[in-house]
Length: 282
Length: 282
Image (cartoon, rainbow over all chains, first blue to last red; front, side, top):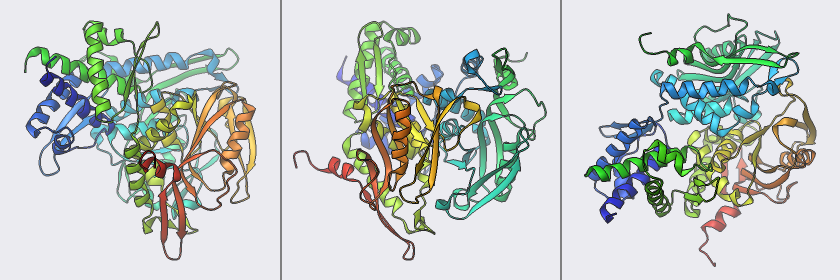
């Protein structure tokens, strides 16, 4: 291997690592030029190699931005076939009899708290909602947080977490009550005023939807902030009730049936995932 | 650029991306050989380029594991000087007058929920606790979750989250009460039996420590699981009280003083960070 060849591969390693460490963030070519002691034209060629390779391997996109605030940024993008594969694996895992809990609940904490699953699911949601151009990713504590954090990371946007109670440590907050669609119990959520500017564009990510009460409550709370909710993504929705309190949302999987006595759970890819799996034009 | 040179750089892009997407996970050379259609000896050379470059640029390590379960894995590793830089920036941000809240609290939600900060702090904690070889990373809801998730991700280990209440949806759980050292109020935390096997090795990550009551409660709860707590990491501790309810912990920053009337907050790097900044042998 010649010394020159080594240098290109070496720079490519350094540039790619810095790009993927900050998805969605524009990094000026000058930053790379300085750090790796090369001309901007050379860095441009390195970036071209990275762009072509990532796209060829289905590992994401690199975008070039021109102008004063110009530079390049890495954009995670999960190909449809990979999304279908990940969700099919997930459904198989979730349909295991050992996951059926007393009360007909399904144990999925190990999966949604796993950094590997959270990253994969977050990149799928980021791919789904990127074109809506959100300023913030929103979730409600607790189980949705890992997946929402990884969605926010993949989009290069901040995460905002709705709390179940009012925290004294966060200043003035807006607090709302709502009724859980399934249990009919009064729930509450709150958000500090300073956590979200008025008029923000947000996407909401959560782990589970039965009746849609939480998502409905989130919409009401967002009204108080004059926020625009551009998308709602949930990992798992229940087949029943078929009619939810919110209309537009994307789920990844559907809990078709859970039978506590028979220790049986049926989880299937959602309509959105099945449509990704369909051949184009079919 | 010859076609051959392009191929090496292209493979390096693909291999590095797959490695950094799964920190701490051993990936067999055969996986890369198949995906990038190259001999294992060629992949070995590619990996050598990646290893040397990452180490030269202070961007992490690549380890080779031999034997039947052999392969290579990426290990995030933050150099001491970078840790000092990150924490110095953090302390400057946290010392801003606008962060002082009624009651003498400090607003830091925007920072600890930021994916970029969470990733940087998680990699610092992973570097700090890697040699203890934990099986799990533990935190307690809510604010510590993003940072703990990124610590777990950097270590390639699952995250376990202690809840403030008992969830009906997670089966049999162990529940303990403890007294907050600062407020003297009764608090509780719980963990489902199935969330952590008996005898696990864990590190605990949290955002804030005043008296150490939460960390003490966590130790009591871990006793119920016969777990070995190998390390405790907190982002911010208060200077007062100087004596905490736990002895061995690593903080990154210290809240020296917060004066609500004067709108003044003083946050400084912790003793552990200052020791990293000191020249070797001094």
